[in-house]
Length: 91
Image 1 (tube, helix red, strand yellow):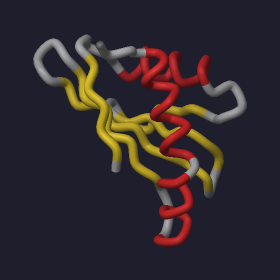
Image 2 (image 1 turned 120 degrees about the vertical axis):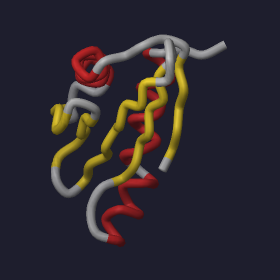
Image 3 (image 1 turned 45 degrees about the vertical axis):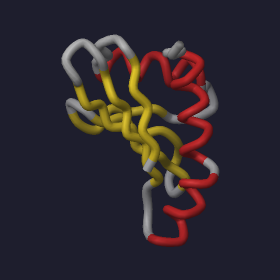
């Protein structure tokens, strides 16, 4: 799992828009009030939003069974993390 904290409040709709724009070849869908899934099965990553009093922490993790999860941690998670870093730059 990878964590990224930004100094602004981000809701799930905003996160979905940002990731859809940044990753146009990936399917981005909201699966709960605090989780967005990115990719197509079995190559997916989950982004969980954790509000933190004026800031937001994104927890990005690969999805799937053991071997697929490892592959997703090495491929899908870094791609999503780069998109988040570009959309929400931190000083």
